[in-house]
Structures are given as C-alpha cells and as structure tokens.
Length: 371
Image (tube, rainbow, N blue to C red; front, side, top):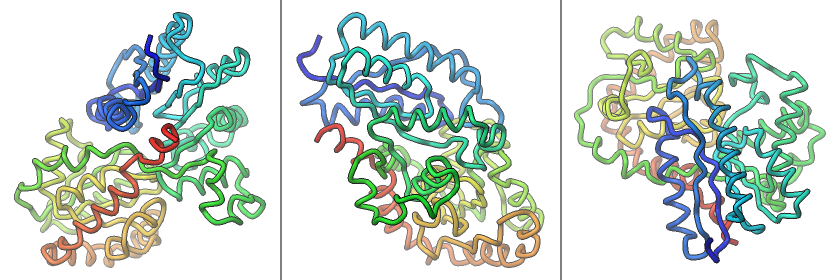
C-alpha cells in the first residue's frame, strides 16, 4: 500500500475503433506524468464482454452495464482490502455512470473524504442524443442525471456549449431565464468548482496522427461521424449525388481499422459535418490535424471552436427541407474549398493549435486534482 494518496480511474471500456481505446492507455499515463510525484495512479478495469457497438451508438448498451457493474465490484474489493485511502480522488471518465451513487453512499456513510470527478459526454438533456431521442424527459432519467451531477464534486464539460445545454435542459428544466448561472460571467460560474469547463484528455492526437500528414490529397470529402439520425448522413449522400466530380466517403459505410480511418481523413481535402448534436466532436479535429479543411455549421460546439472561415450558416442544414432550399449554396461552398484548398490550408496550423490548447488538453482536471 503506497504512502501517497491515490487517483482511481473508473475508465470507459476500451473500444479499438473509438477514442475510448486511446483513453484507456493515455489517461493513466498523463496523470502519472503530471501528478505521479504526489499521487499513486491506478485504473479500475471492468469485464469487457463484447466490442461490437450498438448500431449508431457510442458503445454497446448492454455490455457497458456489465463493464460498469464489474468495475464497481473490483473497486469495492480494493476498498475492503484497505487499498483505497480516505483522501483519494476517483475519476469517472464518463460521468453517466450510476455506480457513482453507490460510491457517494459509501463516502458519506463511512466518513471518507474521497473527491469525485466526472467527465460528461451526453445524456437525456440533449434531445438529439440517443437517450434524449429514445427516453426523452422521463422522470427516471432526469432524476438519475441530476443525482449523478450532485454526487460529483467536480463535473467536467469539454465546451461552453455543453455547459449551457446541461444547465438549461437538465438543471433548469429548459427555463434558461430563471437560471442564475447565465446571469454571471464564466469565471464566477465556475468558482465553486462544481462545474468545470475543461478540454478532453486527448493531448496525444498530434503525435498519433503525425505519420499521416504526408499522404497525398484527393478531391475527396469525408464524413467522419457515426451513422445516426442526429448526424444527418442523408444530406452528405445527397451532396455526393449532386457533385459526382468529387469523391465522398462515409467512413462508417466501411469496416475500417483505426489506421485505415486516419488514412482516409488524411487523403481528404474537406471534412464535412451537418450534425444536430455535438458537444465537442472529435472526427473533425482529427481530420484538421492531417490537413483536411473543416466545413461545419454555425451551431452546437462548432460555434465556439471554429473560426468563421470554417463555418456555413446553420440554417443550410437545420433539417432536410432547409438543406434542399440551400443545397446549391452548400455545393458552391464545397467547390470553393476544393478549388482553393492550398490557400485555405494555410490557416490550419493556427486552428489546430487553438483546438489543442483549448479543447483537447485536460489541464483543468489535472489542476483540480493537484491543487
């Protein structure tokens, strides 16, 4: 048993085709490099039954519960063995995890001083998310999410857009006007530390993607997202039908390895999004790091993350009818990006530096643990 306090990582299940596989290796390494002189960093594994995702989803809806439940059992073994110290930190890399309620129960009843950290990705409070679409605002899920939020001492969100969405739709039941969070500046909102706007722990992206930077470009436009209703892939397919002179690639139409996926990103001149749900978005920044020009709507997290030259008016892809009305404008924009690729690509270094500094570096989490 170490004399140093511990940081326990309640990891997402590592899936090779998703960034959770990268997080499984990166997050403990990052925390050891940054805080290892003061803390013992330990990762709690669950039992992974399957790596096949539920179609259109981020994970497998059944297997994720097996992972979380077995993960909790493993942590309880450590508690009963006296390995977990009363002043340790526990980091949930996905805050949507009901087992935090059981840890909060133990902490308060047993008199521990554990600090609970949770990274929020999505939930029912987002009407375009899987939970939002299939479960909606049913009381059980809304109360569960509020309870999990209350359990965590620090709740982390990758973008200000996500903070606003969460506070308005969940904490304030959709009534933004009555919520005091929105009548203070950002610094005051976060002073309590209950809500933390933090980049995600993805510092590894530039190094991981650097081998792909020399790949020759094609007149190719890539769609990096899951095939799910909120991603509106039908718009991308329609663009392809109206612009046969260019190659359009929907990555999830193919069963790609991570290496094959990154190669397609690197071959492309444009990475395109028309998403209706995005609280951060990883496919677009990955493509930008290997030289693809982002073309994204002026909405969601894109609104704060990308400069104006990358964005098109939100109404152009607000829904299918709006897209049909504005299709010619969008086709013209894509053609302009292809024909002027070299000049526009000169902006990518500045964009990528900004994205990595503000949205793909988890300094806020490290600072909260290490203060």
